Structures are given as C-alpha cells and as structure tokens.
Image (cartoon, rainbow over all chains, first blue to last red; front, side):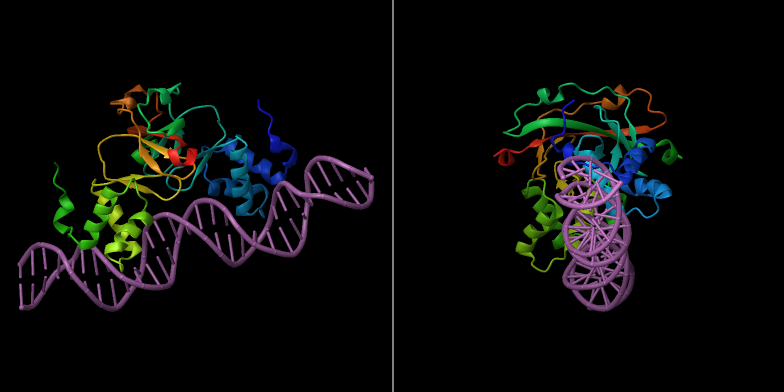
Length: 131
Length: 131
DNA sequence: ATTCTTATTAGGAATCATTCTTATTAATAA
DNA sequence: TTATTAATAAGAATGATTCCTAATAAGAAT
C-alpha cells in the first residue's frame, strides 16, 4: 500500500466517517442518498460536506466515482470491476464479468493518445424497471 | 433503413441543418462548441435550439450522445465503436479497436438485470495534454 | 490538560449544463 | 393561400455540484 503523502494533513471527522460508512452500506449511492442516510444520525450535516468528503475519499482512492449521466454514484469496492447501469432509474449494479487485464494493449494506433485505463459499462434494465 | 414513425411530424429547419452539419465537421463537439460554430452563420440562434436539436437528432438515431462527466459530446458516426477520453481536457477520440460483437453473452448471472448493450471507454491523455 | 494551528464544517450563494416557458415564426399539409 | 402546429428566440428555471465565509474542532505542540 502506497502511503498517502497528504495523509498527515487529513483529519478524521465524524462527518467523514458517516459518509464513508453510508457508501459502504448503500448500493452505489449518489450524493443525495448518502446525504439522506447521514442525516439520520447527524441532522445538521451540510450537503456541501457530503460532496466534499465524497470527492476527498475518491481522490485518496478509498472510493470510486461512477459517472452515470445523472448524479454521480460512488462505490467502496475499489478493485477492478465493471458496472451495469439501468437506463430507466439510473441505478448501478456490479457486472458479473472478470476484468480484462490488458485491454489497452489490444488498441491499434492511437495517434499519440496515451491510454492509461479503461472502463466498461453494460446498459439495460434492472429487475424493478423491467416490471 | 427503418422509417421513422414520427418523421411525418418532423420539420426541416435551417437551424437543425446547421446543427447537424456542425457535429459532422467538428470532432466530437459539446453543445457549446456546436453553438459557437452555428453562430457564425446564424448569430441569433438560441442555445436552447442547439440543445433541442442535438437531443432530437440523438433520439432519431442520427447522432450518438457521449456522456463525459462534463458536458455531453456528440458523434455523427453512429456505427458501433468505442472512444478514448482525455482526463485532462475532456476531448473525445475514436478508439482503434473493433467492437466486441456479443460481449453481453460473456456475462455470468446478472441477477435479473436485462443487459441490452455495452460501451467501452479508454481514459488517458490526448497528444496536446501529454505536453 | 491548555493552547495553537489550520483542516473541516454549516449554510447559503454561486456556477454550469441543461431544460422549461411563452409568445412568435415558419414548414408543411390542406 | 391559408391553416395547422412544429420549431424558434430569449430568458427563466432546474438540478447537480462547487464555492464562500465565519465558526468550529481535530491533532500537534507546549
């Protein structure tokens, strides 16, 4: 594990722990869902605090940010894996597919574009939205 | 080609043609870039008109909407292909990789999630942002 | 334990992309 | 040519997210 250079400056706050915990307990929640969950225990928390902590935890590599086209969603499972997104409700689910190890190597001439990583998203309908 | 049921109600306007043309000429532009391009020829066009036409053309299948985490970008190349996104400037480039034909079939148990399609995005740095 | 430094917070204002509203205009059908 | 109504311009409204500022509170130093 690589020690975080900035770690010395980071403080452990009740709010940060509540945010961290909410993401772990909920299924790929967005900021609003985290906010509602944290509010149960800390009614006066600010939405900005939730957003700030989600961003900070993501920067530190503790969370993954999932861009959905709507509100971003967050994932505490940081090992490589893919997602399925419901095109109706926007919810995210883990995809049952092992990660491609070196998909980047299969690319042809990128014209100078430096490829660092990839992501795969499966789109469809979740069990609820299928009706 | 499948005839569009709603086609009978769609009208050809100068604005729509300018939007269509701008997307074809620019490289995966966002709405703002299309707006600026169209404005050269039609200074009084409204931004809402650009957004409305981009959405309409996307619904009709004439364009593809690329969700980037920032402003959406648009692509007039509608055959299946993947993209590379620059994590610095957000620009989109076509990925030199033939599409997986039936990647959905490789999935394990989706738990009732109906998978309809997939997309792959390569993330990295474009030639300009590499410096 | 008390004090100090400064990261973090609450709450609201601000921003950015996008959509909505409404009176007006213009493309196509009759 | 006239009638119908989709599309437009311009600005207001929305939703997600970030910024701002004075007040608070971790963690370090004393």
